[in-house]
Image (tube, rainbow, N blue to C red; front, side, top):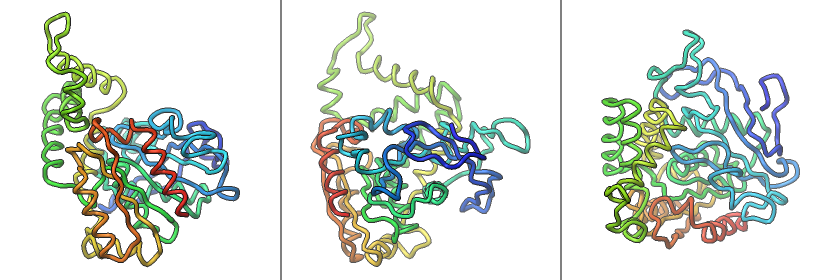
Length: 346
């Protein structure tokens, strides 16, 4: 990884780390140093358009090597022979960017539960801090799914003149009450049971990430050899997997950021906020997912409609899938087509 003293690295196809100095949150609290973990693949901004991909709740900066690997690389939808692709671990994360697992310089111990609350706007500003450090002045596309889609909207609204197309996937303009209700239950589980609560929170979350059709088709009423329902065994496995790689305090911080998400806050409402995209000529492609019960098609369509009312060039696209909310991590052919459309608009 790079260090605070080495030049910022581009095009390495490796995970890098960059210290960017003090960072003030919306709350007024200042982090003494914001370190950002990132990966950049392909040519730099002097030679090619740049794409910013932003991960979802439990993702990392390794989009090209992990959660979007079928989409990023030579000859793929995000062709790294033709475009540069940047992904950074979100502020508050646990994969190299400053968050609850980072060392608090005041105590020489991890921040843990005292790490301050952050918003999707804070997270967008942290992404912008990295863009500045890497001298990336323009983005052909900024995109992400779920939490990543929320932050992509905030990046575009923070710097509309620098973003040609924003492509939020399965992400609303503001988090709705039902999603906040599911989040509240998950956080209560973590508060009451710690690591065990994190596993249970993941199990509950998985029931919102997939669809009834997906669960019926994959598991139905099947039983395991020990007599347990196959769906129950699957959920337990998913909870165990997350505990092995994630942190309860980080989960709490990122879920709360999603709860606070509202692009209209302190901007005069959603339509007024989206007028900034119209003024800058920034295009919006809202991608909904059929069968998504978490941030469903109607919420994405409402975002697109509000953008049109604001005067922005905005279109709605939809993934046809039985996978539910997680389709933005599964439906590679359809995703590739939408990303191709976003790039062709530049």
